[in-house]
Length: 264
Image 1: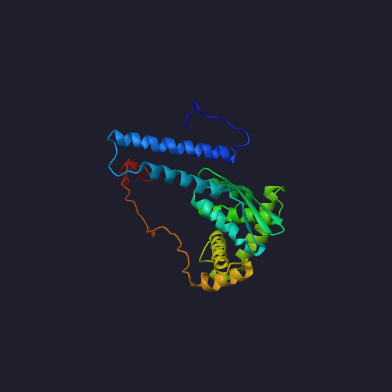
Image 2 (image 1 turned 90 degrees about the vertical axis):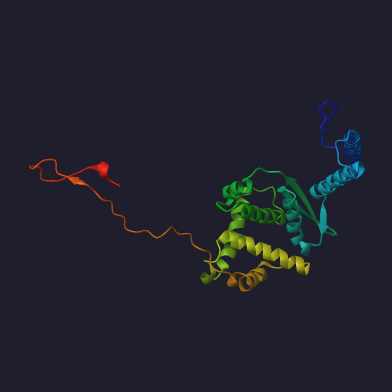
């Protein structure tokens, strides 16, 4: 970034302004690489124009992933998860997500946001009281945000909606696990895997699968065949005896005195 020639535009850049900046960047990148090559500071065969082309292409792909609005049929809501996973893979997380019904289907608008490490754990704990691993927290929060978006109640209090999600979505799934299978995984991991199972099933069929059907399939096809989670236990303890040296200080004392310096 060149601070001397930089410009600040309120409301963001227009498509033309952004394209102009990309053209300037392409020219500058290719020119700097050619200067290095002319000075003998690069290995032979380096294509300066190809490198500049690749950087600009990568920028455009990233910008599209962050800003494009997708439209899809009402029975293809699993595509929300697909879009969120693409953003997560790029290192971005979801700050806001809204869904509005349109005459030709459903329009999804997603606003990505870069967050710091541990953000998901802290946010999920604050909203629901669930203390889980970061990846689990991310997946559960994505489902919570999708729940809020599908309900089209984004203007309601976030804590109240989170409580509703816990009681109507999270807890029913956890309670539906047969008692004899509950030792196989922690509740948050079960829920996480059910959501992943639902996404794969929906992707394969091209339509959203009802959660009840997904849960039945997950229990019978996946969970029932898992081993129970190992319980972490400390090493077996043994009785330990410490030799104690006893010395009589005088003949007229009734009890012996322990010399603590002789303890091993």
